[in-house]
Length: 143
Image (tube, rainbow, N blue to C red; front, side):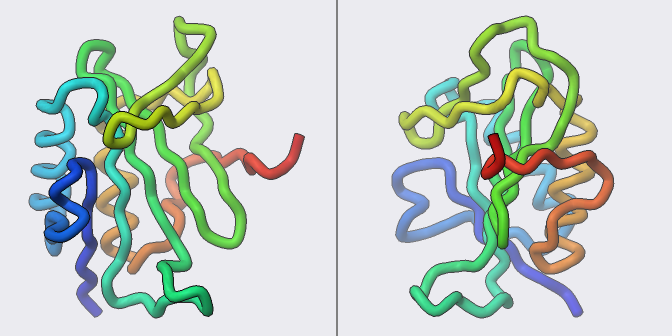
């Protein structure tokens, strides 16, 4: 089966998300995100073909965060649990990206190369919204 993702990272995307159906289109979303000011450094992705949960919202979410200057990024997956991809330790004590101007903190050890971010986003699309398997994940709901 082929899947389609909706990507949101600008205020006007709430009514008209970017539609992603191919790996190349996923790369284009990441490239567009890298071209944004840092207060738009996070994109939220959802798979259209997945059913909504009982509250009427997607049962999954992949947050892609990018830092074009540092050439790194971070990933957060929300499903049954919320987890972030484990990466290298950041040179910053506080790792914060921004989703439409709102801060999104990440653990200090969440720096990932942009190639890894791209690979994970492509896998998210190919698997219909499953948490990418090419990474080590850390559950954020445990202390």
